[in-house]
Length: 253
Image 1 (cartoon, rainbow, N blue to C red):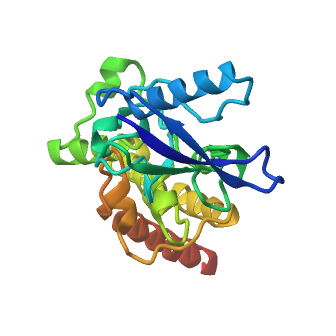
Image 2 (cartoon, rainbow, N blue to C red):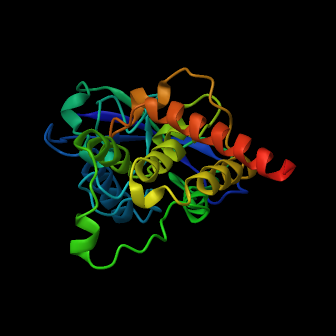
């Protein structure tokens, strides 16, 4: 398969970026998208040109690092996959593919297709943990949790923090990410003691970092590689409102 690649190149966050066009030939349809970029980089290095910088690590759809905006979609045209799981058979022979980094103010470009996503880590630091002491593993496993709640918590915990929801949102909102992290703890008894302060702190940090507001277009859910549900956003909103009301009531006393 042959492709024309229009790839965003930018030396650093202050430099002016531009698209550069590359031709690549004889790509196997079973080749992954990142393997295709590896092949392109090998040819660029052979020509003494600077290779294209892009993020990757596990290449198993687990780490969330391989975020690329491909033909107008975070992680590309396939559904429920990360970029590293996208294969070239999803494209047509001779197709022009446009590849960009995530476009969001809280995700400044480091170089080419790599963006700084530490904003998501800062949100987690504000409350994405529990300090409940459960003793040893057997003691923790003895805490009764309904099957329904356990399944919901596990589904929320499958979020890998790739930032596709932010890239898909016209407002660069991180609501799906934050709500998934709030939900995975709010649904479990270990997360209850800090639930109120957690949701307030994480939402406040999200706003401080410059993420936009949710306007319910559901593009985040549609593009999420782990199919995180928008119902998490409703749960987080309920948790936040209840926490704010309780906080204001306690202040009045």
